[in-house]
Length: 131
Image (cartoon, rainbow, N blue to C red; front, side):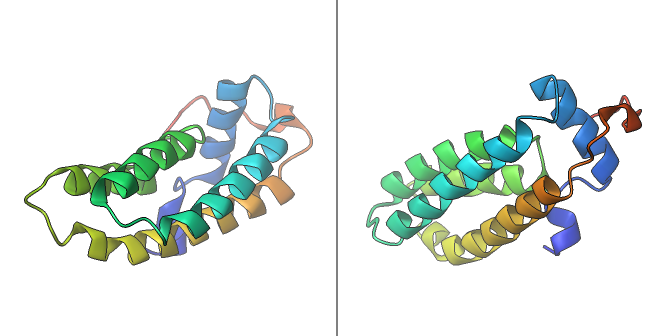
């Protein structure tokens, strides 16, 4: 997955959806900062999880947090790996975790960039589509 594919294809649409979800873009940078800090702490812990169930539980929480910012291809990737880990027949699913962690790093970097470049004038956002 490329950096461009991790987030919504149209940043203006994504910003409008965040504004609609939160009522304003004002709280979004703080929400992003808290999510990123918590997620980075959790990423350190997941490396020490030994069971597929524990990792699946973490992915379930992570997926919920990611979806706060909208349904993206990445949120679907998280859901897919969670399902694979909960399926006792898929013993290779844990091997996919390092790639997901790499995608998560990209996602967090993009969230940070978005928060840093968030438009000050919300009236500039006119798009009524959500992704």
